Length: 279
Image (tube, rainbow, N blue to C red; front, top):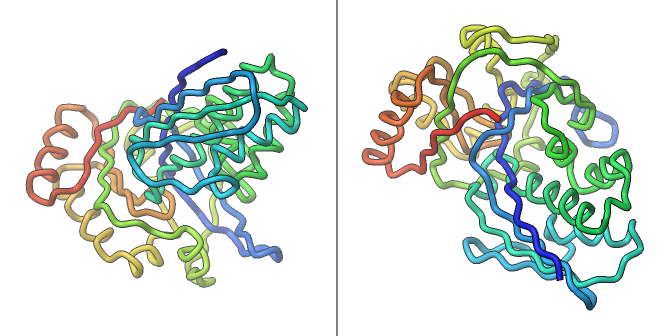
């Protein structure tokens, strides 16, 4: 029996531009994806036998083929042509359906960890192909860089962010359907983006903050607009919704100021607040 525990980080989208709707129903995107220090914990145990089982005590998750972590593990086993027993224990710290990529990160961690435990039978380029089968965000979590993600999110180019900052994540506890948000987009929501190789300071970073999904997400969950205003009133230098929501983040220069804002919003609003660092 072999057992490993790994950490699956959340992400934020420092910008998210929807450039066009494709003929296949997906959208052409241009976005900066940044990992942050809020993480799920995944324990993978490989033993004699057969089958893949997942246990998660914090939140109810889909079973079998509807669960990305289970699907990721089965894809590795199929590609490696191995018959073993895989037991997965997931500790969720990243809010579900919150625009932070928790499910995609968990799936990528399962791909990398199980493949490594089996002796890396699946080469990294093929692992990226399997990741894209699971979801557009999953390939991002296979690598370490902060990136520009283009296409549906699969074309990744590193970007250097030299700014010194921390983020306050605020989640009001309401779910947002990513599919519903994209379905609600109109041509007026689309915008163009010109990627840069380097972002030198917080002012430049805050000028980049943009999310074409905000309008539709706010129509589904108006509290997102309230969260943005409250985070701004707490001294954030820039505020944006991450992904398809409902999590909002604020950019702060110093952790002590972000911590004060987090405590204020927890006590006044009851929202979940996490101060995180970029990874």
